[in-house]
Amino acid sequence: MQGEFGKHDVLGLISGHRIPTDCSINWLDPDDGKRYCFSSGTSLLYFQEQPKTNIRKATEVWENMKIDSSEFMG
Image (cartoon, rainbow, N blue to C red; front, side, top):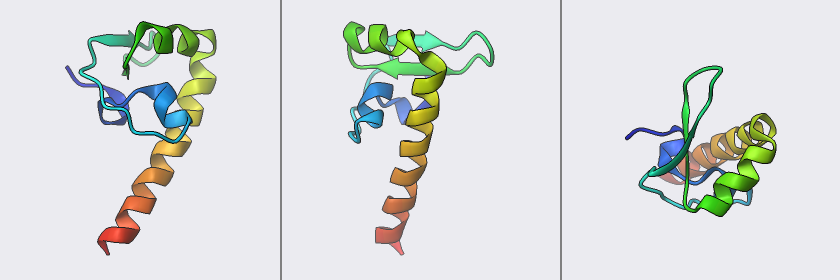
């Protein structure tokens, strides 16, 4: 199953940690059909309190993580 952010837990990303998941706990955005993955049911519940805000925050962190990783590869 595919998920956004390389199948990493959305709330983990927001707190600066890459927590891999198998995407068995997930949330499907009704607006665009994107799937977001979680390492626990608790993480999913917190995410659902403000899904759009959490997606925005995780996207910002994910982009910064990708930039930071590419600096070490160059």
